[in-house]
Length: 320
Image 1 (tube, rainbow, N blue to C red):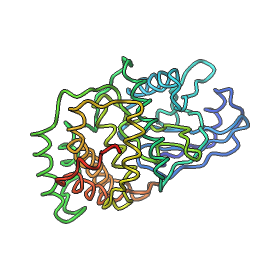
Image 2 (cartoon, rainbow, N blue to C red):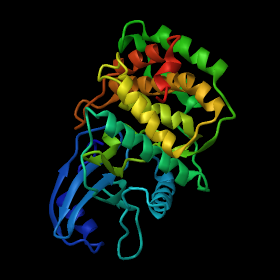
Image 3 (tube, rainbow, N blue to C red):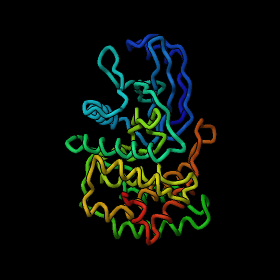
Image 4 (cartoon, rainbow, N blue to C red):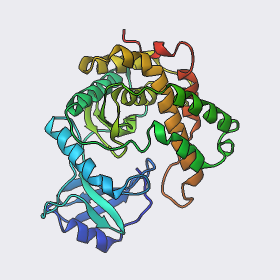
């Protein structure tokens, strides 16, 4: 989440008037994240999230996201509904951007999850994967393996971001291209289930949010993205064994990975680390100076990449 585009008060009032959600009380920009312009919208009818779609989110993909969330909600997954106006329209236009008014869910996102919270997150991910096994929608993963070279090239000289990064990335891209699997179980995945995209009350998951990277890919790849973001220290240098084991235990309650998936986890985790290293490096270079957004340091994902490349990396995914 972030704010790149501002909404004029008259435009906001006109938008809200299309819905049965009352009138505007306040609208405050949300600075976290880097993908879209997001606002906490309060009306006389309650709280909502107003999202204006920017950068990597294509307007043409929005019907897919609406349909995906409807499917997950029908399967009792804790996801936010995209609110429809009186004419049944979910996707609007505001300030020259496609926009949606989205249900506000209770709960907070975590910065230091406990093992119990990691277990709950793993179980929620597994339940979501079960709900998606029969989902017929599909979307190419624009941030998937086949696109990482393009992200690296679009960033420019990676040594400007971190000394020696260009050589590391070149070597890792070559390795992953030579070893990336092609026959693991796949369906639509979240692809970005970091702690800030999970809402919790105590040890209970109350919301899975921000599905704008959701796409067709390996389910085990989704699991390692979650592992990399929930089990490591903020600097990426240390994997907490209790948190890692709890996450895997929670997931295993819902999904039994195949032997091929288990064997591929360290490799997929290297790919996930490289993916976030590259997109953070790209944003570090190209985020506008006047954007209300917190740029994310790429170096913690370089540290994760190094840890997942170690000979004992498979031990990070052990279930008690």
